[in-house]
Amino acid sequence: MISALLVVALSAILVSGMLWRQQVQIRRIENQRLLSQAQWVSRGALDWTRLILRSEGDTSAGITYLGGLWGVPIAKTRLSDFLGQIGEARSAQGAETYLSGSIEDAQSKFNLRNLVSSPAPGVMQLNVEQIASYQRLLVSLGISGQLAKATALQVRASLGQSATRFQTITSTNGTAPTPTPQGGATGGTFTDKPGMEDSNDNSAQAPLQLTSVDSLLDIPGYTPETVARLRPFVTVLPTVSAVNMNTASAEVIAAIVPGMSLSSAQAFVARRQTVFFHNASDVMLALQGAGAQQVSIDPNQLDVNTSYFLIHGRVQHERAEVDRTTLVYRDPLTHTTRIVRVQDQL
Image 1 (cartoon, rainbow, N blue to C red):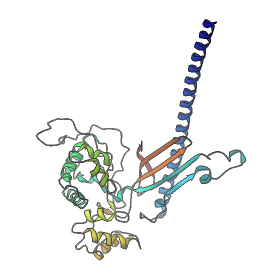
Image 2 (image 1 turned 45 degrees about the horizontal axis):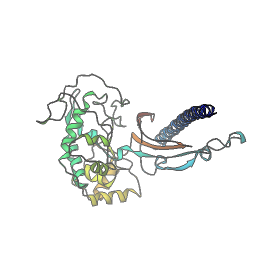
Image 3 (image 1 turned 120 degrees about the vertical axis):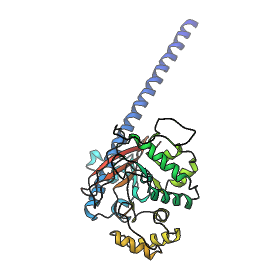
Image 4 (image 1 turned 90 degrees about the vertical axis):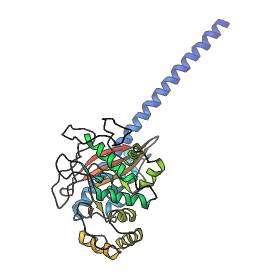
């Protein structure tokens, strides 16, 4: 009898273990299915957002401002309420799926890629004016201005294998080549010195290319607190780009306009809330009205249109969540859009 009880107990343990492993496997498969469905919903939402950007580009006459349709965020909304219900058979679909997100003008921030320019094919050199602008931005935020040149050196060194190192965005006034999605590397004939030029590092290996503000942590002198302070005002784009004066913050405007104080930039932003700028002449008049004297508008640095947008989207599908940020490029001539890079938030 004791032997029979032991056999029964052992059998029960083995069966319960098998059932538990099967339950865990079923749960894992369900989670994978839910995550895959959430990712497809996120892709559909991204396509819809790109359609908004293209439609807005077709109707805005080459002007991007904060009052546009793209600037309206989407609060957490049930997918079934967002798309509507089609018949009773589909009334329950999307009941546990929620969408939220917003579109951010990536050119409203200072682009660290501008620290390095290409005056001739195959030549990469530091942009003194942009370094000075970035230095003013750092000082205004209470950060050491000495990081400006170190950042420029790091950007130049990291561009050795960039597929877009000699490209600039297409503007309505020019025909520069458009960027290609990042992720691949081309050989080319780039022979600039890789790495930081100091006595402590003689390595011939180039640093990784800066793809986000978090990449600044690879540069000595930057701390997580510093990067967090810079995040609202700094970005890293694949190509050199202009700052959109219709969407830029007062801190960025004060940095890129020589001789302009932060208070004058705040007055400029306050005036911009009543009417947006249609061209460079409107920007010049507004800058002079805000106290900036002898302002010369460089179309390569200041603009009223945007080509790069950051799309922040969040999809909650039952237990699965997808929090994704996508950099999208919109061609200012054809208004077509393409995905540059995708980053999932952990």
